Length: 97
Image (cartoon, rainbow, N blue to C red; front, side, top):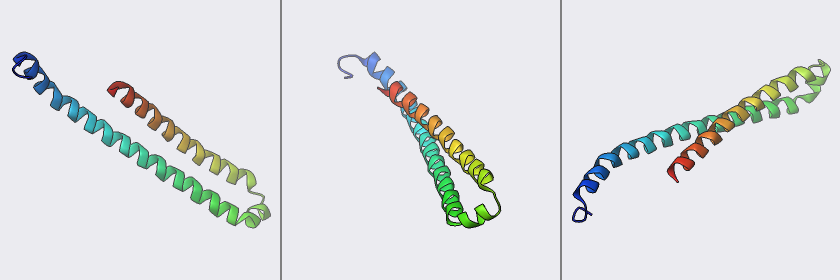
């Protein structure tokens, strides 16, 4: 490529490390978002298993609404993180392609 255009080769050699660093940084960010999504989903699953396992106790103290609200809040937190992850993924792949 240097034989065809030395200027173009120099420009690419200067730009390529910057692009590579940006892609690596964004990839790490996407990985952290993915891990956060999985952790939040695990927490909501844990809460639902505990509550469903102790449904007799929950019914005995008439706390169904409280438990439903707690679970709903956890699921909404998972949804918010997943939306952020999907938006970031779409931005990344749209920019790369």
